[in-house]
Image (cartoon, rainbow, N blue to C red):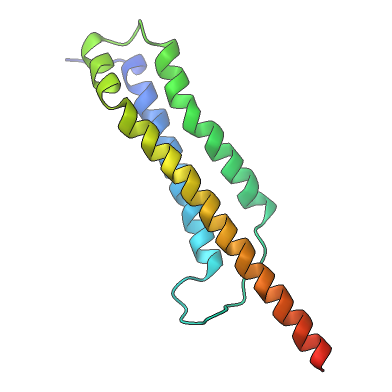
Length: 126
């Protein structure tokens, strides 16, 4: 069976969205300084670039499913059945990744808040 561009496009867009979300998660993990062994590591605020990347990832999460709906009649029946069979797994994956991004951004913001408070207290004690 030869796959056409319309057969592969929804899957390729889904893979791109998942990779994008994993990169956003990795950036947040690095900036949160997990695994340093410190109780309250020095963490910077969540940058606007990460916030924008997270919003883009939400948009990218929906594009493969919209593409699948729009190309529904042009996709070969075997590939259409494959997509339909794995639709729940694919949508659950992107939903979980979006929430993981939000959770990591919250952890980073919380740690940055603690960092700012500690900086102010050190300045007041001097």
